[in-house]
Length: 281
Image (tube, rainbow, N blue to C red; front, side):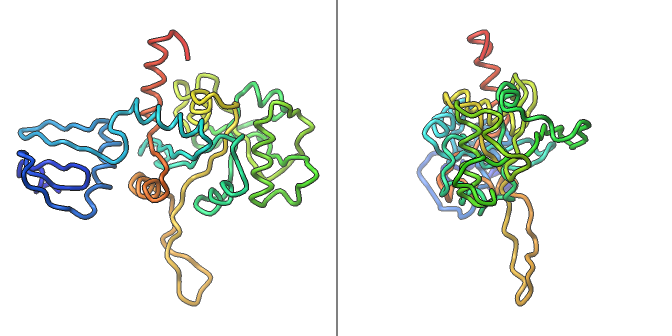
């Protein structure tokens, strides 16, 4: 890639083009790299002694990414949000809790760590009597886990199935739910979000709440960290090289399944811009 840049060529949509736009050569694998650079550099234009244009498949402008993902959340679809490489360096699959169907939950469980968490607003956590899981939180990023819950519903079994966890997510989002709507402990893990969202804490918990707010959804979501399957070990019940998905793997996953990707930095920039325009968000 460095040879391409130093030769005065531009990269556009997975193709390598001369600056005059006359010649074009398919370059396998470059698109995902350019997408990752677009996310990291927070820009789609890089200026140097030569001029190169980066046109990733994801929207090149952070504002557009956030607006489009807000629409996706509003339409009941998944989004993927990446945090900083200096923080968790992970991508979370996120959905509004009210839109958690059995099929969507099964997809989430299949492609993630399976520990489904449910960000909720502080107001909702108080209303549903969801105290913090521990009095002294020593989790590395201060994630505010509450006691775990299952919906206290006649159709519930053990609480761990895709059906049961989807039902619990929808119950957390329901305006008619109260403290006795749930049994404790359970198999879904509510997370109490900070009131000012990502402007106060740059975490996936707060990102989920901000996207729900922007989409006009109830203040409850569902999220889980995307993971790699790893490699089979022939004849042994083991898998090697299993790990969290990082930025490039998350971009490939999003492309495969038609799920938009943005960063928490994108969302912070957007929310701070909205605050400057409107005085509040």
